[in-house]
Length: 334
Image 1 (cartoon, helix red, strand yellow):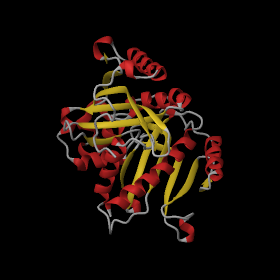
Image 2 (tube, rainbow, N blue to C red):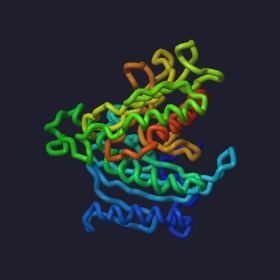
Image 3 (tube, rainbow, N blue to C red):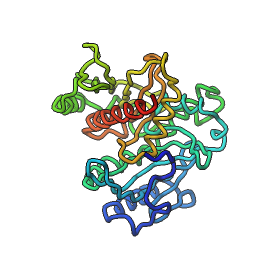
Image 4 (tube, rainbow, N blue to C red):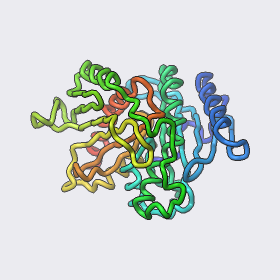
């Protein structure tokens, strides 16, 4: 598995003529959207990307060819990424600040790019060749919104660290579409995800506004209630993020112990490996220390503007894969 935080592609300089037609359509969607969002003097377009200013830096939305086969025979064809390079002030902060920001994660992970030294926020998805519909209807809209809401985690970390006076007008809720409305995730979203998980043998329970599921951490595990080791996923549609407003919060907590692990280092390692890996789930959140559980968890928040029917099930499925990935990484460390 690669450990580079640079775009993980076969070609160091992606070219449009190496992208399949379906991916070129994605590039055009990204470019046209950014042109509608930002004045012409503020955005930069290339054959495979669009760069524009965001809250604390500049974000690049890009499409890169992968063309890599997974161990189970599927072809990963593209990587689509939203990468925000944060301002020089934030570059001066250490990993303690990044870890704090990741506890408030919305749709991306804050970390330092080892090749450049820049502080960055990254959201990304590696697309299977067969997932054309999902690419256009789920991944692209999610990455477009992610490019705008990634920085809310940094905003809150700065508020915690320096107070609201430090940020001035940037200390307030930016006001994304629907941020003050009741959550757009409805009982049917959670009920559908519960049925999907149970059909796949997952121990789970849903209410009108939440879903809890357990994923095995050891062979044959079903539920912590019977003494098994499991990862615990909780999704909640009644949470208000301090800077992103109302929406859907989720957190996958691993069955680790602070007595045996440097939790901050575990979270850092998982963020780095997941964002540089190839056969990994879509990255729309961040690994962070979860003090109340004395453990590490993958946490994220999708504001109301990002609601799409079926996303509760998608996030749950990705977290199930993510739990297996984390178990493999931690097993290899020990």
